[in-house]
Structures are given as structure tokens and as C-alpha cells.
Amino acid sequence: MTYVTCVTPGACKGRANHGSGRRLAIVSMGTRGRVPPAALAWVDPPTGPAIELLDQTQLPGTESVVTCTDVAQLVEAMQRLVVRGAPLLGIAGAYGVALAAARGDDVSAAATAIEAARPTAVNLGRGARLALGAYLRAVDGGGKVADASATGPDTAHQQAARAALEQARSIEAADARACADMARAGLALVPHGARILTHCNTGSLVTAGSGTAFGLVLEAHRAGRLGMLWIDETRPLLQGSRLTAFEARRAGLPHQVLPDAAAASLFAAGQVDLVVIGADRIAADGSVANKVGSYGLAVLARHHQVPFIVVAPTSTIDLDTADGATIVIEQRPAGEVTELAGHAIAPAGCPAYNPAFDVTPPGLVTAIVTERGVVHPVTVGNLRVLGAEREVGSSGAPEQPAPPGFRLADYVERWGS
Ligand code: MRU
Image (cartoon, rainbow, N blue to C red; front, side, top):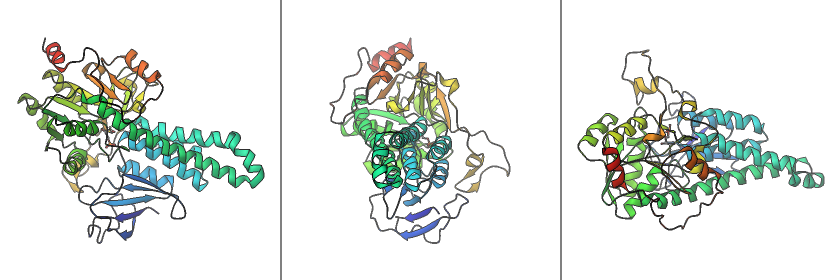
């Protein structure tokens, strides 16, 4: 059973099904006040084991929590976008493996099911595999059996389950540090008064920290450099207008939403200084898979000589995927395009092309901001050097200077020629 807890007072009256076609039980009407619940929370026994998810399909109108008590429910929540965004999917994937382990389920099968839930977001499989690895090492390795002989097989199993949970917590903590470090690393690329265009949703709803692209925007705002945040509505599921606008308002950022199709005229009017987006998978050649519409923005940015910046943790870089053509793009149901908020906006049965993501070739990407530094220019060699480094992320690092030779003016000059 998947449980839904409404935390927007009064908002869930009469609802027992949040649009998934599957019966969900409302277990309580919440009074948690105006601070929204965390995007994801692990629940220990005796209430758990379980994973609580802020239901992003209901935002901004309703803040409700979906509680997953097994992996099948978690996979369904991922596919419905209750929980979404590459870094948070990675964290959720790891907690999902920990959940299977804590329940005594088949942990390898759980990891496989989780990884397949959304094929493009590389963090998902990475998180699940890391937690599975921690579990299997604990089963096979020392901690295991020494204690098991003394206190029984259950103890060994519990220790392995704890190892998976610790791995999930460690991925979550590393992501929070990465957000802080990416924001500092990227700040040097943001000019004063910057009018930044962003796409999809990349803030605290999809990371353990302040976000990827949104984290940098927030840092720019705190540094007094943000003139305007332009938010693409991000059709068809409106992650921009529903979620990024929600986060921008909460953070007090100057912002406006626009229809995706209005971006071109916004560039033409000279109203965009910088495009800043996140990523779901970055191939070894620097190709960036991100929410569908990102590639179009990159083409527009190049045409209008505007820098196109990708902010993503190194956990989103996939050196095993050679290039953009090899990235598997998740295809979504036609109904997401032919319906809006449950209402038909196309003739019944109308087929639709609905890829969740598109791929921006590296030649259109000005720089990739990671927690380990800024990749510029975006080349196979530069990404490999970055990927080969040991994890160094630690919050508290000072703002990093722009990489040698990186000046926005240079880009404008180069692209203008
Ligand atoms: O389909 P979604 O909503 O999960 O897509 C999310 C995005 O495309 C984000 O831009 C991406 O995951 C990077 S965010 C931190």
C-alpha cells in the first residue's frame, strides 16, 4: 500500500487517488505549517522501513507526502514523477535498495528494477548500484560472518541492510556538498545583473542541497548578481512553471515564467545574458542529456551569442557512454502531451511524440560546472581528467575563479565572428 499524507491544510479533502490510476490511502491530514516537507526522507522502523516522498505531481497547489513501503511503489513513484530529477533519483535509488534490504527482499532484483525505472538519469542506476555493492560487500565480506556465527544469520543480514542504508546516506550527503561547491564554482561565470534563462526544475526538490542550475542562480542572487530568472514553463509536465517558480518565489528571486515557445523572441529582444540548466546524463564526449527543450535553447543561445552553462555533479558524468547518440532517451506516454491537468487538449487517441529528454552536443555547451571545478572547453579529455580525480567536494570552499581564458566577453566575440 502506498500512503499519501496531505500537508497542505484542507487540500486533500475527498481525494483518495492522486491520478496514478492506483488507489492511494490518505493516512492523515497534516499540519506541518508552511515549511514544505523534504523532497525525500527515510523512515526507520518501527514506523518504517519506508521512504517518504514529497509528491511533486501535486505541487504547487498541494503539499502531500507519498510513503513507499516497498520497491514496486518506489518505482511507480519514480515513473509518475512523484520523485524526479537526476540527483534525487540517485539518492532515492540508493534508499530503495536499502529498503529492499531492510525488508529482506531480493536486493539485486530490486536494484535492477530501480535502475530500469527511468533510463536516462544516470544517477539512478549509479545510486542503486552503489547501495547494492555496499550490501553485497557486507554480505560477502568480514562484517558479515564473524558476527553471524555469534548471533545468527539475521544479524549478518541486518548489518548488510545497514551498510546499504549508510551508502544511501553518504550519497545524499555528498550531493548536498556538491550543490554548495557547484554554486561557488559557477559564480564566476555569472555577470552582474545577469538575466538567466533556465529550463525544467533543478533546485532543492531534486537534490539534497540548493540544487544544480538553481543552486547557482540562488548563489548569484545572494551575491547581488541576479537581474532576472526567466523560467521556461517546460511542457508537457510544467516542471518550470509548477516547481521552479514555486522554488523561486520561496527564495525571493526576481522571476517570470514564459511559454517554452517564447524563448526565441526573448533572446531576440536581448533579454537573456546566460542560459543555465542541469543534466540527466553527460556522455564522455560532453553531450548533455537534459529535459526536452534544452537542445533548442542551446541552438538559440549560440545563434544569439549567449553562453550556455550546464551545472551538474560529477555523478551525472557517464564516461561509459561514449557520445550523445548512445544515450538512451526515455519516451513518455502520449497522454502527457494530449492532456493538460487531466483534461483532453487533443482529439481522443491522438498519437504524440513525447521524449522526456534531448541531447545537446558538446560544441554548443560553453561550460559544465561541477563540484570539482568548471569544465571548459567541453572536450573528451577535460571530462576524463575531471572524472579521474578523486572526490574532493567539501562545502566551505571559496568562490573559484573562472577557468583560465574564460571570459564571457570572449565567447561573445568568438561566437560573433
Ligand atoms: O523528467 P524530470 O522532471 O525528472 O527531468 C529533470 C531534469 O531534466 C532536470 O533538469 C535534471 O534532472 C537535472 S536537475 C538537477
